[in-house]
Image 1: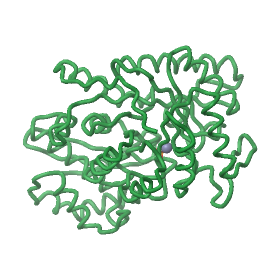
Image 2: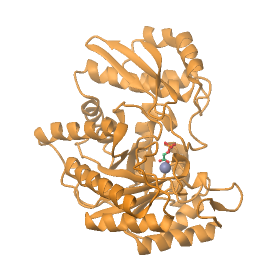
Image 3: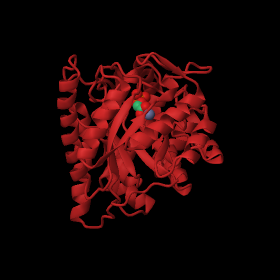
Image 4: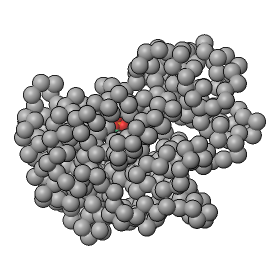
Length: 402
Ligand code: PGA
Ligand code: ZN
């Protein structure tokens, strides 16, 4: 077992863990993120994580682990803090996910197959939610962090992403026409960046969505807009909205545009406003990302408020694979739609594609070009393998719970 420092997609340093198995070597690298939620596990600087790893390595190499739970309980015994600040959330998820790959390799299976067998569930291919234009903390002169395209009907994942990729390129051409400053520049998630206004971008997105029979999603990442007191600050639009105005604005957006998915419309402590929005709109997905941070206790609070009908799943927010699985199970148990997601600062690791299928998530949130194609293309390969064994449960109906 070994560790090394490598580069993440936005050139920040991150770590990767390797484990030798009886059948070969597996490797797992750790994503980071830019607009991190305050309830995520805490990362150590990479050199500190490497030092920690070398101190603790013997515990992970001497033990004969039976399964994933054994590995993850050892992580939780070594670091009893909820936010894993002693071991480092990055080291924790690095070790945990490397072991998942090692167990799968020992079993002679791909990771998604291993998970499906463990979970005893039939394969369902998730639908893509792809980031097309971006702003907020992900760069670009737009306050909203992500504008997505989402397929309505999905025959196959491959067909959906090809359609979205086409719409993404069309969007680029339209931006070139409408925004004289546009240079086909992309942000950290390989989404277009633009100097058009929020409204201009919504109109462009809606036009291309309609032409391609796609729907739209928006990630407000509203904790990044929140001033910590009273207002959501829209710096580029030169505007400030209180919670009530924010709610009205989002409801109006949903009336005027084909928006079927809204992520983090309010800041991460405002379970109540999420709940008001969820009650006032029907047939749309209201999704919690920073609200939950893949943490089951926070999901329970969300459930008690009926805050959302969807939840983002990011394994590195919680630090272990076991906790990620428990979160997905709990979300499904409360009939929430689950959205496995990449991070803005990520790596070429395709683990989340396997997790999305292996845990039976409804959607997977990804980028659509550049370094982001690694996860998309792995999804295409996984789907092909599943289709050829024809046990697939096509995820063709829209599944939205009020
Ligand atoms: P990240 O967030 O920049 O922390 O990865 C992306 C998101 O909000 O979905
Ligand atoms: Zn988000």
